Amino acid sequence: MGLLKEKIAFVTGAAMGNGEGIARVMAEKGATVILADINKEAVFETAKTIDGAVAYQLDVSDSAKVKEVADDVIQKFGRLDILVNNAGIARMIKVDNMDDALRDLHWRVNVVGCWNCTKAFISHMIKRRYGRIVNMSSVTGPRVVDPGMMGYAISKAGILGFTKAIAIDVAKYGITSNAILPGYFLTPMVRHSAHETDPENPGRVLDGIAGKVPLGRFGDPKEIGYLAAFIASDEAAYITGTEFLIDGGSTLPETGTMGVLDG
Image (cartoon, rainbow, N blue to C red):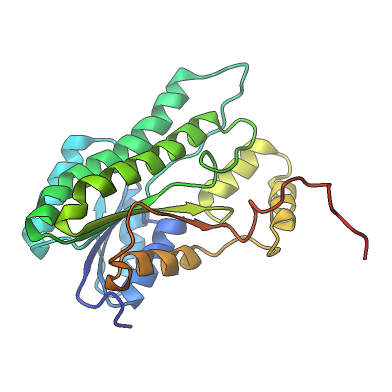
């Protein structure tokens, strides 16, 4: 219960999926959790189900709005201890139609969103000489990639670079910056990607994915929450600029056929 006792945490993309899982676990560990999401109705409904949580509607790609929300958070709570940059999108881009608009959308939401939120809060963390920044990257881009995921892969690799760049600049202030690289978690984003892959039978896609994960299942968003809570805690004070892989072993196999034995 006390891992994050009396901490103030701000989680973006928190209305559902991994962001909701992170918010719930951090609240369970004692933090006061602030949820932010572009989906106003969903984020306020989710906040109602988490003890002590408050919510903001927020488009992380809108720097002016991010600053407005950050200023309000500091005014109301006096500080921010933990920033979780989780908001993101994933859309497929065919190689024979490399859609510039979709490329730019991934960059604005996934990378510039991290930039905007970090920029809005970092001066307060520097002033206090304390802070924990947790950025949501992915195995897609830094480790592996599936067909059609160019925009997403580029942006998630960018987040990893951003995480390390922030870490080196703020280490002297006692602030840490780390990245989580999730594999397959059963979130609305994954369901959407499965539908894009096979609109007629997305369940076939989901079953196929889960069957290829060594642990034999999708991850639960709360499992990312447990990892994020540790990274954001004082127990992880000597960890910064680091990437945490959480994928059920999905990136372990070198191929899907070599070394497979019967029995």
